[in-house]
Length: 454
Image 1 (cartoon, rainbow, N blue to C red):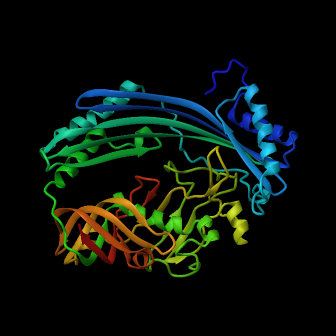
Image 2 (spheres, rainbow, N blue to C red; image 1 turned 120 degrees about the horizontal axis):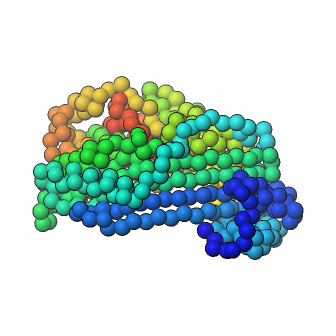
Image 3 (cartoon, one colour; image 1 turned 45 degrees about the vertical axis):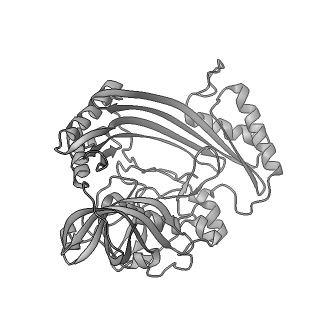
């Protein structure tokens, strides 16, 4: 935050955003929008019974986007002093005057703007934890992990708290603000000795601290997972069913979301660009994006352009129903925004998801793997070998080998490969969906993938 001695330019973030828009219009902008983001965070690191680090940060960022005809420019700053703001506003307008024409730029039309929104309960009003309280949580997690037989060292534990506030004002008539909190802690430990060591972790994250799992449970789970990975074997190259643990299965849903982003569709760089209204996933599969999920990790009452957002079923019984669109990509495609705009203070919006998830299936995990004679249960993925144009998929992996419906031993240093278009059609979800991340999926089985030993 600026250390300027100038008097505050406004009392609240919403007042600041409104002032920026008004001044931009007076400076010659045809239209403008302003975003103000406040943030405060506190985190501690703990290792082998000692406090290693305490970090605290707080600040306020402002972003201003201005339009002159079909030209636009964006500027951002952390200096809210009067001496800095007026030159910034004038610079934005001057930049817009010389910017190239963009026929798709502009504010969201008033008809799409949110006029009211639900209380999503994403701000924890409890007292902010102290560094000492966070250190106690981290210490308890590490202590529980080190108590697991076979755990020999610690990579450390950490705990954090954050609060962020967002205020958005546009000259099209939108003004809105909200705040959210996040609390989390994690623990990472090693098992084994010498060159035969394995590392694993566990964590808990929630909007409200009261929704976190216990530190002892998280520590114990981290320790048990590390020990379970000891003495891994290699796997020979073959084509087998692959089962994705919920820790990594959400990545498959994330690849799907990238493929239906309006930006990729408008550029023609998505392997799903001709799949609207077609069967993309197996029968029975549904994928949902829900910005209004109570206490959701990515919940927000309106999108990054002030557009009304809503729960959207992206995949309905395997069929693709919509793209992810903000105002600009919607215009480029001759469609209407779907309320999926996301943005920071430094540039224009782009389409993104909120609480994205694949709905749970009907089978338990045990039932899901019961008929697998030979297969792979993946718990960790490495690298990003994804071709968004063709859907080709290849990633390093580790996990556990499946024989006759049972998980029998750990495996590592292998590669899993396939094509996402084919993988989506061969998926079966289990019934164990939980909401641990922003993008979630239950355990997922995919038929006929290639496993290659390294």
